[in-house]
Image (cartoon, rainbow, N blue to C red; front, top):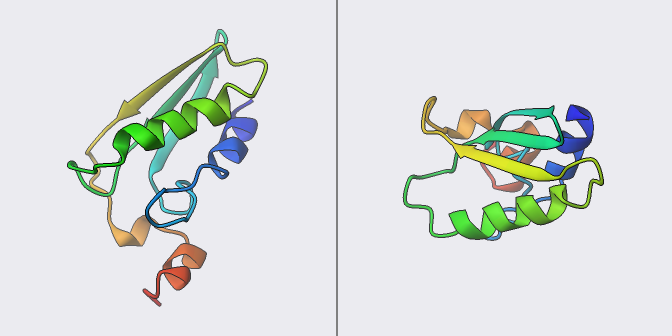
Length: 97
């Protein structure tokens, strides 16, 4: 089930950058237990104005998986997000390499 969750999260695009949140390195971990998907993630900055939008997009995508009945999204700030956490493809798309 974790693979399905990861695959679904790859379809969630950051509304500002139009790159998926997995490639951006925002997802730190996923788990699934007793019909609940647990997502541990971060944002590019603590004051991210699109945090609520990203959370709604995650919930919409994951609730499409019939086995998931509830979603727990934990936003953490440690370790802090850096550009090095992005995939090579995301870095290239944003012109970092």
